[in-house]
Length: 368
Image (cartoon, rainbow, N blue to C red; front, side, top):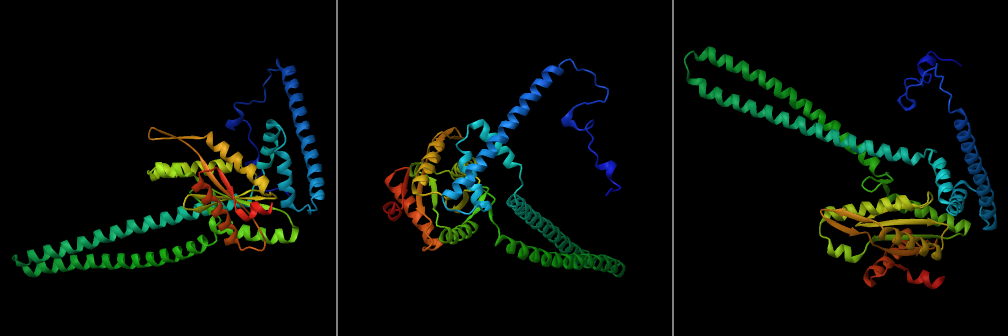
C-alpha cells in the first residue's frame, strides 16, 4: 500500500554525506577489473562466514543434545557463543558484528532509564530556579515596604500614600500569583518524584558502571536457581574487586572510581553475551557464568585477572596497574540467593586476606 510520503521517504544517495558526491553520469570505469576482483573476494569471505555459522549452529544443537539440554533460545545462545570462542579472531569478530546488529530490548530499557534520570535532574533544576526567582520577588516586596515607610512623612501624604498603596497592591498581586504557581510546581514535582521513584524500584541498570544493578542481579540469579533445579546444569558466580594493596595505597576517591570504571569496561569487553554482569556496591562487581562449573569459573577468573594486569590506568601522574581479587561460588538451588552471593563474597574476602588472585568457596571446592 502506497503512502503520501513515498517521495520523502525515498533514499537520496546523492545528498547522503556517507556516499560522497555520486552522480548518475559517472563514467570512470578504468578500475572495473580490480573492483570485480575485490567484489569476488568479498563474496568469498562472506560465503566462508556463513558456512562457519551454519557449522557452529549444527555443533551447538549437537552439544545441547549431548548435554541433555533443550534447544531453548537462551541455551542455544550460550552454547553457540561458547563454540564461537574457539574460532579464529577475525572470523569471530565478523560473526560477533552480525550478532551485535540485533537490537536488544535491554538496551532500550537502559536508554529509557538514562532519560528518566536526566529528566528528573532537569525538573529539579527548574524548580530551583523558580524558587530563586520567588525569593528575589519576595525580597523586592520587602524593600518596597521599607521605602514606603521611610517616605510616609513627606508632604502630600494622601497622594503619595495612595500611590504607594497601589504599588504595593500590584506587588502583592504578583507575589500571590507567583506563590500559587510555585505551589502548583511543587505539587507537580512531587508527583514526578513519586513516579520516578516507582520506576527506580524496577530499574535493572547501574548508570555509573553500565552493568546491571544489585537488585536486578539478585532477581536473575534467583531465576537461575529455578532453572538449574529443573534442567540440572552448572552455573557459577564470580565476585571481584581491586586487590588489597591498591585499596590500601590509594586514598584518592576519584582515582578509585576511575579504577572501578576500568573494571566495568574490562568485564563488558571480555564477557560473553550470556554472562550476567552487575555492580553490587562497595567497589564489588559480580559475574554470573551460565553453564560453567567450578573449573570453568577458575579459568574465567584467571583470564580476567591476566587481562586486568595488562591494563594500566594513568591519573594525576600516577600509573596504576589494575589487579583484581576474585571469589568463586556455585549456584545451588537449595540455597537462597543471598546465601549464594555471600558464599562468593566469603571466598573473595579470603582471596583479599591471603593476597591470592582468587579463591573458591571452601564447600564448593570440596564438592568438585
